[in-house]
Image (cartoon, rainbow, N blue to C red; front, side, top):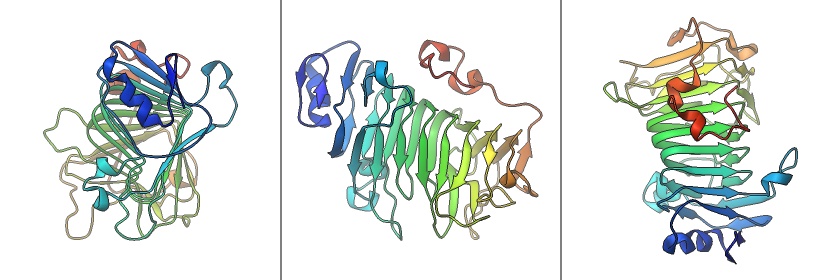
Length: 298
């Protein structure tokens, strides 16, 4: 594993730990391979991690995979189970596969990514688990041309503004298959997940078995817009938390301009918007200063 330009390191975590004595923006370039480890990042200044040389990256498969197999129950918390746990501001990740392959039955909360901080960008990366694949917390996050797969609440959030653009949302078979679980409370100032020009489809789930989201907490806000919704999406589109505690008091489940067989149905919990959300509403007016211009919101 190469920590550019200073030295070679055997693991990604070793390279991250070597940043402790440095200051200012840093770049880590990872050599091709599969790295069986959990990676925890808290470096104080801007950090960018590449899974391949950006000059050679176009139209080629990712060649770096970070893999672990740890449940939240065993780790003691959701974030502690993550294959990649990023707890910092100003972070960018490119061209890397992040996998937590723990289980697919019961008690299978196991994160691939736990992202916490301001101005995070994730580009052409792959995130895979079964339940709670991607956790986005406290900050502003942008995902462009990524692949995210799971079965239960596999994109969940708290105190975050997140925009998912031109990404693949691949639904595995599970007993219950909601994509999102927003943890926003009614009085929270932050808390919105927007999916723009994404493609929602099955990788094993039955037709009409999945939902765009359910409310983890009572102020959930999620929007799907300008997106393809495959036949895996149930005609209702959205679902309550569960039968005994619905948590529908102040939810805002929104849709605009979607197409595909999964976009048709009664949508009893959803609002149909008159216009789409704009990136600056979610990412901030200054988003062009930190979002990679090669991956602009579409």
